[in-house]
Image (cartoon, rainbow, N blue to C red; front, side):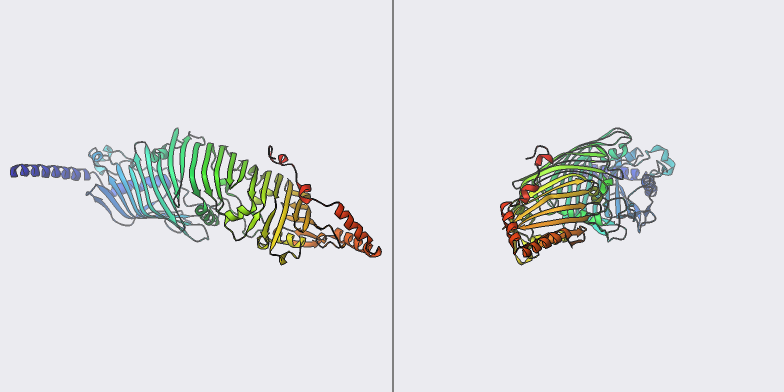
Amino acid sequence: MNKKVSILLGMLAAVILFIGAGVWYASTFVNPVALTALIQSSVKEASGRDVAIGGPVSLSIFPVMGVVAEQVSISNPSWASQSEIKLKRIDLDIKLLPLLKRNIEIGHIKLSGLDLYLQTQKDGTGNWLLTPTSVHSNTNSGLPSDQGDMGVGTLNSPEEITVTDARIHFQNAGEAEQVYEIPKLSLVRSWDKTDIDLALKTSGWTLGVKGKVSELYKLINDWDVRPTTMDANLELSLNGKSLVIAGTAQKMPAQIPTLNFSLRSKSFDLIPLAGAARTTSTQGLASTKPSPSSTSPYLFSAKPIAFDLLPKVNGKITVNIGELVLPDRLPLQNVDASLQMEGDEIDLQKLTFQLGAGLAEVKGTLSQFKGPVPIIALQGYAKNFTLGNLLQNMDVKYKATGGPIKMAFNLKGAGASVHQLLASSSGKIQFTVGQATMGTNFLNDGGDFVVTLLDAVNPLRKKTTQTTLECAVAYLPVSNGQISIANSVGVQTDRLNIVLSGGLNLKTEQVDLSIAPHEKSGLTTGFDLGGLVKIQGTLMQPKTAINKESVVNSAISIGLGILTSGATIVAENAKSMATKVQPCADALHPWSDIYPGMN
C-alpha cells in the first residue's frame, strides 16, 4: 500500500512539475512592459487619450497567470481639472493555452478602486466625448520583440470584466460635484450573450440592472460597420421595485437604429429618479445647448427643453405598468402607452392611466426635435377624477371634499422651451370642477395670480376658513398664443356668481381680465365692489386696476337711485331676481368640439 501511495505521489509531483514548467515556459512569452505598451496604444487609438501607469507593473503566475498594474490613469481634455479615470489596480488574467501558440488572450479584467470623473464646460461639452486617433499600435507588442511576428496583435474580447469599489464623479462647470457609488459591476460573456450585473448607489436610492444582452464587444465593433442586431432582456430595479426591459435593436451601416422594446412592471416608483433628474438638470445635463439666465420675467420657463438629447430612431416602444408612483406621489394605475418613432418624429399613439375612479387618455406627436423649433401637438381628456381624491393621493396639507373634475385639451405649439411652445400655441382647453368644499389656505397657496384674482372677487374672503364651490367652468380658446375669454370662465360659490372676461397673451404673459361677481341673492345697493376691479400686469407680477367702465356704471346707478329715492335700485333688484345668471352653464362648450367622441 505504501508503495502504491509513493508511486501516486511521485506521479502527482511529476504532473505538478510538468504544469509548472509549462506555465513558466508560457510566461516567457509575456513581456509585461510590452503588454502595457499594447494597452496604452489601444486606448490611445480608440479614445485619443493617454494612459499613465504610476505604480509597478508585474507578472503573476499563481493562482492564474496575469499582469498587474497599479496607479493607472487616463488623461482628460486640457480644459478639465484632472484625469478622467483613476484606477488603483488592474488585473489582467491571461489564458494559458493561447500562450503556447504565442498569442495573448485576456480572460478576465479586474478593476478595483476606480474613480471616473465626468465634467462639462459652460457650453455643455462633456469630457466623455472621445476623439479616436488614426494611430495603429504594434499589433504584436505583447510578445517578445524577437518573436513578435508569431502572435496575434490585437487585444481580444475578455470573457469577464469585474469592477469593484468604483465611483462616478460628475461636476458641471461652476456646480458642486455629485458622487455615485458602484459597489459592483460584472460583465460576463456567455456564448453570444453578455450577462450584466450592476449596482449603483447615491443619496436616497439604489439602482440595479441584471440580465442578458447580445455580446457587448461584438456589438461595439460591428455597430455601424456591418448589420447588427442586439437582443436585450434586462431587469432594472429601483429601491426594490423592478421594471423588465425586453426587445431588440437593429443597426444597418449609415442608417439610424430600429428599436422594438417593451417595458413592463407590476409597480415602479419614479420619485428617486426625479430627485436625481433635478440635481443633474441644475448641473447642465438638461441639454447640450447653453441655457438662458435663471432670472426670467416669465412664469412658464424659457429654459431650453432637452429635446436635442433625444435619439433619432425608428421603431416602437410599449409600456405596461400596473402602478406608477410619480414624484408628486400620485400613484397611477394601469399605465399603458405606445410610442411609434420615425427619425425626428415621435408619435404617442395612446397613453392611458387611472387614478382611483379617474381615467385619462392622451395622444400626441413631437416632430423636428433635432431642429431649432420642435413642434408638439397634444390632445386628451380626463374624467371621473375628484379634487378631494387628488389632494389625498398627493399627501399634501390641504384638504378638500368632493369636486368632480373633467378636462379636455387639443393644443399645438412650436418652440424649444415651455414659454415658446405656449407663446405659439393654438387650440382649445376646457375643464370643469363640480361641488366641493376646500380650505382657504389651499386657495391662498395658488400663487400670486390666483391670490390677486380671489382678493379682487371677494376682499373679505380671508375672514372665512373654508370656501364652498358649487361649480367652476373654464373654456379657453387659444390662437397663436392669445387666450380670449368672452364670459367663458364662470364660477359659482355658495354666495357669489362670478364671470371673467378679457384675455391673456402667452407671448408676453400680459393679463387683462375683467371680473363680474354678483351676489347669489340677486340684490344690489347699486355699488358693485368686485365689478370695479380688473386684473392686469403679468402672470409673474399681477396687479389690480380700476375698471373704469364699471365705475361709471356704478356711479350712474347710485345717482339714479338717489334721484328716484331708490326706485331704480328696487327695479334693478327685481330684474336681477327675474333673470339670474348661470356662469357655469353659460361658459360650458360641447366636449366633442375639443376632443372628438367625448361627452
